[in-house]
Length: 172
Image 1: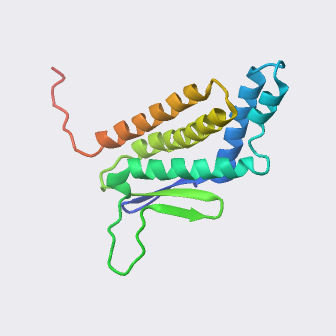
Image 2 (image 1 turned 90 degrees about the vertical axis):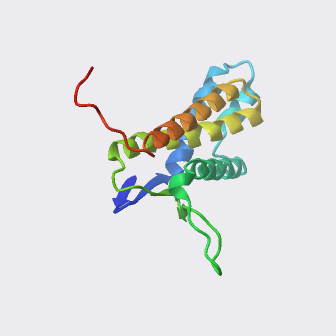
Image 3 (image 1 turned 60 degrees about the vertical axis):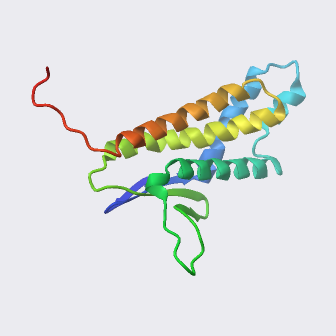
């Protein structure tokens, strides 16, 4: 299950193979949009899952994951205790990435359902922007903008939920 809630802890789990597949699909479409005049550039753009290339994609995906966890700092932080290895809410088990959030009891599940696809969008878009930048495709900036937009939306949604608000009894 992608969203798991236990008390005040929420875990948002993402499948790495699914993320890589999504990146590969977008890269394929970008390659097709280049046309047939430059077959070499088209092949490199679409060759995300080839040996060697997948290492770069995985590394950049992990970096995007860590950036999301850092952006969610008020909810992902863990205190460093003496004698323990320093770390924060990153859980990697095999082919999954899990964002562990410590949430207030009154936190909305609707907000969790809203940020789940935004986190996925950020990780995919920023990884794809990096890949397209490496192979020299002009649409890299578009994907970079998409990733920044997703991260901005994540921050906005999570900030909205940090303080409580009251609705007035009368609409005017």
